[in-house]
View 1 (cartoon, helix red, strand yellow):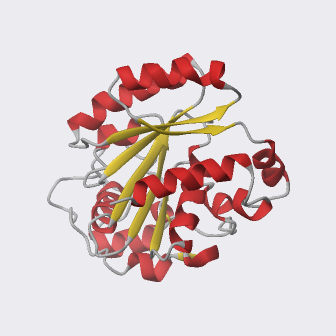
View 2: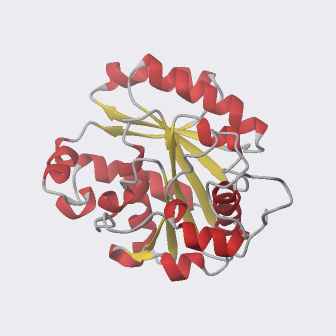
Length: 261
């Protein structure tokens, strides 16, 4: 099994990498579940499908009430609602079939009560996340919230590895440093990095060195690829727009490293 959470500062391109990795794994024979747990919910476009008319699980109030025993938005009193609701049928029932056989689950995020809130919707999503990353499936790719909020809530429990995507820039690396500290708090020991949008060696060399010094080994460096922008403008997945572009070739090399025994 391969359970990987992909995160990073907003705008670094983590969703593009998550969607491309998911499809490459599927092409290599893996049964892949892709989980969109980012507020922007753009993983569908990176996969090459359209889930814009799909209601995120976090907004399915009747489902959450049915499974937790309490309506979202109500007064959350411990013991009044189920902290471990039934979720084992959610991926099959509410998943969306994407190209190459990838199954996409759009989770969404919880708005009520703040990041630390224990509410019906929060309990439902946390139970679902915990189930998805522990079930007997070949590969799970999690596209997590931009930044570090999700780690504070512990929703990344049980993943085998976390990949932090950074771009050449100080703020992006500072986010990676914060993620490393918080990852340790929730028990994630295997943290790796990917440098994205690198224009040249001078552009990315210092970034790779800094990540290595932080104890974050770099899986690969994805070059700045104009075809990714062109694909986005045409509402296509990068893998469908040009599967032999420089960026795709590097992501393919990263995928091979992830599946190497």
